[in-house]
Image 1: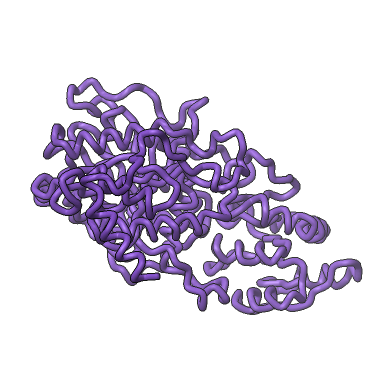
Image 2 (image 1 turned 90 degrees about the vertical axis):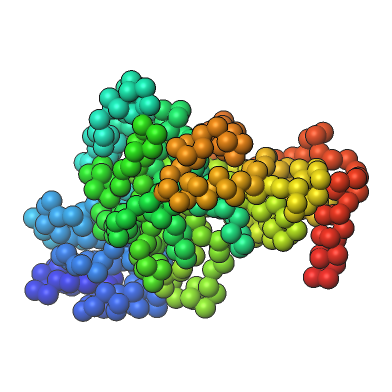
Length: 494
């Protein structure tokens, strides 16, 4: 085994004096040495003694992926005892208890890596139940049990009557739903749709959290006129790296704004793009799981890129800039896939959809994907824009029906941006607002993946199949122009 800490040599001496099945292969002085030794395969377990600031959820996850048993010895009540992947032993325990835990950790090492996952927790002396909630330390109650909502419920509706008495912590409350808004390159309107989707959900008396996980161009704060230079999501990820996310952590990190008499909670994005490394995959996964437990709906705004850096992938510790977007897509119950309704946007959307499908191909439980075409206008694609785009999508696109269209409303959007308001406030009866309400309704009606009876169904089973409403003749009048342009474009690419 590898030992880290234990400067006094108490546990090393106890291990070596036993002369049994456990022996010390290396005594590391720095945690980077632990990681290096772990990758060589010279040990089957790691003993970490004491508290160390550099140890985080992500680093322990790297050890767990090597199928190493992990035992942590710390003082009772220490914050490190909430970290996952490890068997936690008190400094007050006998040395023999440490030896027993080391052997047990080796036996559980592989199961812990597979069962606990990015947000899991293994506590000393107990197996990981299949239905256990992620990130829960031994003896803790789930954070939702003591979460009081952040605002007075007497003023959560325009009429002043307040929202229903349902609270996130009430017994029997089902987990909320994570809806991730994504689209490829070309600014198809991810942030605008995400912000307004969250706003319109408030009309349904849902408790909503809006998360800005875009690591390239975070925009939520600017769109809503928020002036604070502060990243709530980065703070939450820092907490998740070192402990279980609690209700108190959430209340400290979220910013709450008033939207048309309702209250919207927001986890603001990174304040500078060079802070992207703070949003690591494992930490963000635990944050999203915690938010799912506290809110009825979690809407996540993301970046456009989902490629993994192949060079960095050889170094498992190196953060990936696109990891936040990838994690948000993998954790989603539903993905709102956006494309732009013009001759540039449709080919981009077709290729982006294939990239998304490749990303999710290995997912044990794939999210539902709803395709929506934004900025629909006849000036860009002809006199029958919906018919033209459906025909082109049917001919060149994937076997996935377009769910709906969002009209182009430049003046309406400019007005809301200028005032730092949502469409619920600035133009609640506009054509675009009506379409967004329809989008929200379909997203809420789709079954969340965590309630699916077949948790290991293949990705292809989730693809929405074409119905009789599809255009039968893609070369019909009104659709011929766009289809021909796309045909020329794809033939040149090939």
